[in-house]
Length: 303
Ligand SMILES: [Zn+2]
Image (cartoon, rainbow, N blue to C red; front, side, top):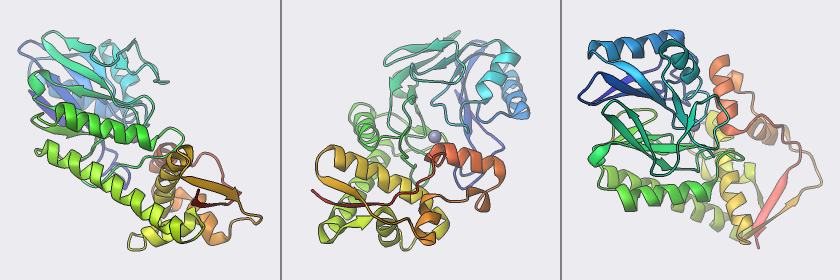
């Protein structure tokens, strides 16, 4: 039995808000997944929802450390005493690390962890027994795609995670993503995500085959039809592909002997507070790696 409780943090980055989940067994213990942003009221809501089924929260499982998923764990821990389970790479407060194939239990409620790095270095996916469901955090979400932003995000690791989930768990009954509605067509959604990434990469390689291009060049061509306010996020994503291609020796970069223009800089160093409210801006900056200013412009070409 799974109950979804949406956190009160809607934004362009988080859709309707972060999905927190309560997982119940037959008994009176529940596992909470992703308590979300640091919201006292949301943690109280989770405790109250568990109580409506006569259960207390006895374990807290966190998919990854991004600020819209993890900070609530410390608050919920303080309120319930339940231990917080997280990936070994997690840097937020947690009580127990959990790795590939290991279990999180609360009474007879049970999850199995899968190492699912890529969107973040500390990302876990949690499986229900008998593959009755898969909690994917920000690996797969209810609508749209997720941003893979360096340095915390790694495109190749992310693609490997997607393929692994499809190949080994494509027969799971449902995906419960970190944002948006549950997804019934598990294998279809994973196929779609995998194909989308391959298509984007082909577009980038094709453009670099024509001529040397900067990240703003690539973004304005590939994301021409997408709202300009999303171009900075697109730039981080393009950068993730370029890092992978450069690492593989397929693309080379050189730093241009000029500073970015204002238009280029607005893509590389966006003022996120003009797009979303202050709290969401902090979330977006952390998710996207905008905490470091880019003042040198690199041009990329096929190697
Ligand atoms: Zn995230």
